[in-house]
Each structure stands twice: as structure tokens, then as C-alpha cells.
Image 1 (cartoon, rainbow over the protein chains, first blue to last red):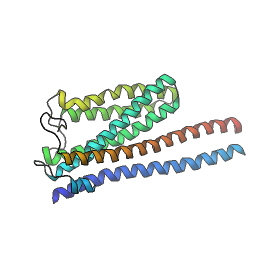
Image 2: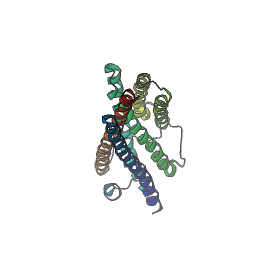
Image 3: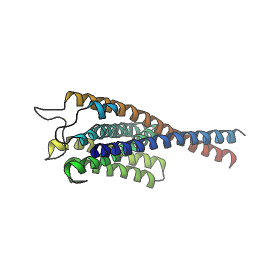
Image 4: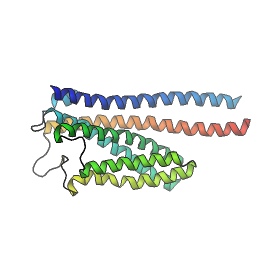
Length: 45
Length: 206
């Protein structure tokens, strides 16, 4: 049973890292999109 | 996860701990895919001198670094209960660590060189040379005496159910890798666009 918990811990660590990386990337896309829109509006003015 | 924990049988000697193998191998395949894309994109950059390929190379390289870090971590987590040590200087482990250091160097170069073209060219060369270590990692267990498990052994192999679970796990990870490389590449393209817009803004407004 202890070994299964250990194993589950290893899987959780890997998935947490991958999900965090995915979320950070998606957040970066949204932020950069906003920045691009702002810059384009500023240039058009 | 369901297949790994409930469908795949427990290994005879290592027991349940061996189930980390499905994650470890899939992560390694994903890391190789990331570095493979970096390798091809680096060659295309050197041939075509188009920054589009440089952006793709750095995006795929970043994904490769994340996955290879996890390969090393899950490998250590597997080694501790099985070999009784977190790390041993086995050829497969050492060649993987060297690969990790090479691509860390790739990103250090990218940070250190300010000129866009030079940065892309230097990192493309490191990316191409670094990829030569991937077959070494893959074949290390064949070329040298190694305690690292090997999938392809003469006269024996993986249990069919284990193989099926491994293939499903690898397929899932390949899909995830494709998604994350695509998203990370979008970030790189957006950053390029911002750089272009900033230059245009400076020209127009001073």
C-alpha cells in the first residue's frame, strides 16, 4: 500500500508540473494578446 | 491513469513501483520529440535564415527541457526503491544528464547573446550538435554495461498488456506534447510580433 502511495505521489508531481506549465503558457498567450491589441491601437492613433 | 493502475499487471520483481515506467518512458519519448523538433527547426533556420524556425526551435526546446527534467526526476523516484539509491553513474543516466545540460546551455546562450541573428545562429548550432546525444542516450544500454532496464531484449520482452498500456500512455503524451509545443510556439510568435510593433511604434512616435 505504501508503495502505491509513493507511486501516486510521483505521478501527481509530474502532472502538477505539466499542468502548471500548460496554465502558465495559456496565461502568457492571453497577456501577450492583450499587449498586442494595446500596441496596435496605440499605433493606429 | 486507469490503465496504468488497474489494467497493467504488477511486475514480478519490482512490484507496483514498476508502474512508474509508463510515465517515465512516455516522458522520455516526449522529450525526444521536443528535441527532435528543435533539431529539424534549427537545420531549417540555418538553411533559410527565417526567424520563424528559430522561434519553433526554442519553443520545442523549452518543452523538451521540461519533459527531460521530469524524466530525470521520475527516474530517481523509480531508482530509490529498486536500486536503493537516488542516482547512480550508469551510462543511460549520465548520457541523459549530459543531454539535459546541453539544452540548458542552449538556453543560457539564448539569454546571453543580445543580437537576434547571432543568438538564433549560435543556438541552432548547439541544438543540432546537442541532438547527437539523443541516439547515445537511446543506445547507451546496448553499447555499455548498464543496469538500466531495456525494452528490447533477446528472447523476452514486455508483457502484451503492459505493452498496450505503454502505447496508450505514449500516445496520450505525444498528443499533450504536440499541444504544448503549439501553444509555446504561439507565445514565441506573439513575442516576435510585439518586438515588431515596438519598433514600428518607435519609428512613428519617436
